[in-house]
Length: 114
Length: 114
Image (tube, rainbow over all chains, first blue to last red; front, side):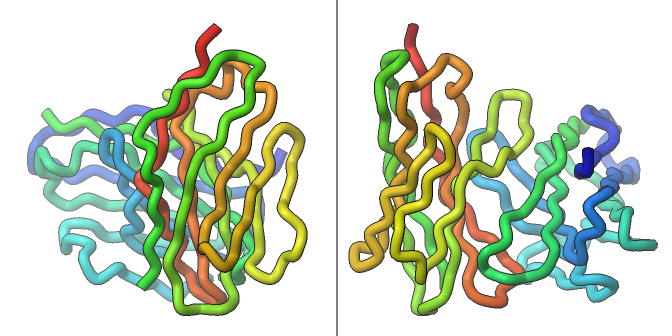
């Protein structure tokens, strides 16, 4: 089945130690998104790629970066994680940016900071 | 700016009964899409149902239906014949025409009681 896959499901890192979360998709969608979701809150959009074009949300901390080497893969890099970065990170895709297209989510990576 | 409001932090429903989860939205755009997602405790976001702003009929998908009242800017989710597996967080979301962003409400935690 075509899907969005996030690895790992659970990630533990140390305060200040860089960490990379990965997302892959077999849907061949043009748009890929990264969301941060803290406990009992709505997902918050960090940034997205429309094909190769990177779009950063205005309030996304500089600590967070992303790479999309090809259509299938997208990475979230956290350069120096702080305790406040502990959260669920969700990757999503959509074919285009039209209003009638739902986003398809992966299972998420739950990040813990020691 | 888009704004999605879910006024019910938590809801309880008896198994086999119907339940309505409220969602109101605010947009100045005439063309937009409304979505409902289910998020079980395991974390994945599952797309349930979509309603377009120009759709005259209320959307239905199996036990899910969307009570769309455009003039009131509300898009309530109705779940019929609730099952124990319906216990989860439910998020209402909106996407404006040709807008990469999908904005989510704060969510409603639904608990189905046996």
